[in-house]
Image (cartoon, rainbow, N blue to C red):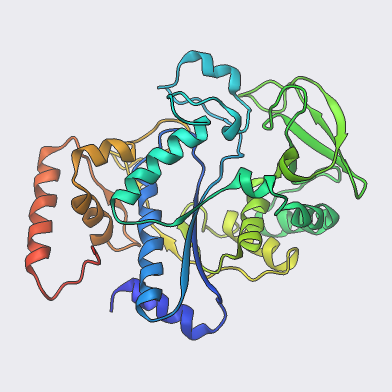
Length: 349
């Protein structure tokens, strides 16, 4: 039995993960590397396996476009340095025809996986926040911040001060989110400062104020935000790369926050290995490390690219160098062999 079918069977038999909602997520901080396609494909295989078993399943893909620009890709013009610390969806697009930098890179990536026959429903974080869908969850998080601080300590070993809150304000003066820190919550408004030296990669303007934590006034911090997305969107199955799944890591902490703070069960989880760059290094969209999905899609036809992602067991790393002719020729040979072997189901349709 194919591993995705086994997962689908486990999900259904558990009786816990209903309604069936598979989700994946990516921060479009730069040209999205080909490694991110592995998550797209793996989640789609589970979604398709659920459908094959006769149950209704939804597959969504979240572009987490409210995160700050916290690294500078080498291919961006120098003028974009001024946007360091800004939320990605508010940064101008480096290419014409897109509303923002986030939209530019996200839609390029979407076009690639659409070309593989994978078409999840796209969700933009800024639209969800902007519609007020996170408002109630944000209030719950701020009201239960003492419990969240305790979970950070007990699970991940982080000691958060008593004036720490997992919410970041979009500074109404300079527009940055990466430089703000919330230090108080009175049940209606948060107190915050846009600190000049909070991070090394951006400089705050020094503004201090109070604001209601509603809609697009700010966002939850990453590990809390992940749990909040599960609850708000209604996710019931989502895996992640091994970097998130280590003991005491981001998934363990998000899971605890989800269950103990938000009273929502942890979605069905699984770990998949990375798609590694030449030399076995991990790719990074924000730093411009690795090969972009667009570059690989120009080298390999869609059916071959999908075959590369599907043929390798999800718990085994993929190391592929598209600049190496021998690697490409071997991939073609493997594909031809698989297509002539009627006993193998590569899940390529």
